Image (tube, one colour):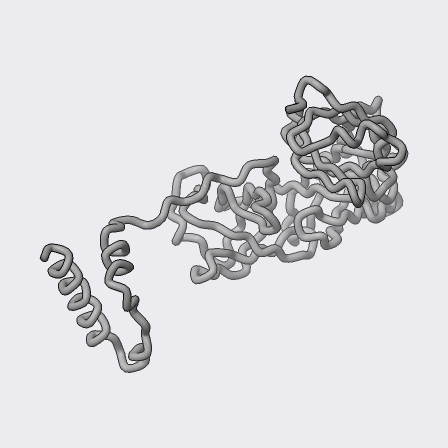
Amino acid sequence: MGRFLAVAILSSVALAQGSSSSAGSKSAQYPTDPSILMRESASTGLPDLPPMPRGKSTVIGGAIREVDTVRDRFTLNVFGGRTLKILFDERTQVYRDGEKAQLRLLRAGDHVSVETVLDGTTVFARSVHMLSQLPEGECQGQVLNYNPGDGELTVRDALSREPVKMRVPAGTAIVGQGQAAPGSADLIPGTLVSVRFQSDTKGHAVVSQISILATPGRAFIFVGKVVFLDLHSGLLALVDPRDDKRYEIFFDSARFPMSRDLHEDADVAVTANFDGARYVATALTVNSASDH
């Protein structure tokens, strides 16, 4: 009897909603299964949001071109001459000049600094800082060209895969990971870099620091657990706990007989050369202590 009464009440509510709809929404469909109505009615809140995407974040500066509240995304005119679509939701923290603000206050034309992280193949905003002053930004990618004469650096951005042009003033700090006194001579095509920049009054990106991450021909040692493995194509991906970053490394299974012991979640150490396009293994060790 109680179930019949509940179904009757829910059905009446659905009919009332349908009758109060505008003429343009008469074709709206409602669940015909009473159990579906009861389950929906029992849910008093929205579904739980998924955890914040993990991984290394990147700070991007620019001006908002448009905000799409239907798709929960905004388009950013990134300093350097490109655009980027960035997703947001209730997890995104918004600030105006350092003070907490509401998400709905995002407006086209705002100068912002956005902390982003990759969520699968999309770019998600962890936080958005609306600024009265012109913002700073960060770009990670691969050098396409560097002209020391006019100081123009062109980088293919890792997020959008589009080229970004920046001006490198004389005396700009250049640092490296595992390199002794790197300099502008290391900015050859194929070099992986992380670039910090500021916008000038004309919206041009002016570099303040360049970090050289990998130069073609250099050898690297990676350690960590395998998170992806394709023996057929000779590709493994691992997450190195030293920087919590994911690295994809190619290997020749015929050259490394121990690769038959590889499996996802295996603990490995890999020495690889960076050839300007990818990391290629020259040595591979599988830690047997992690075998199951």
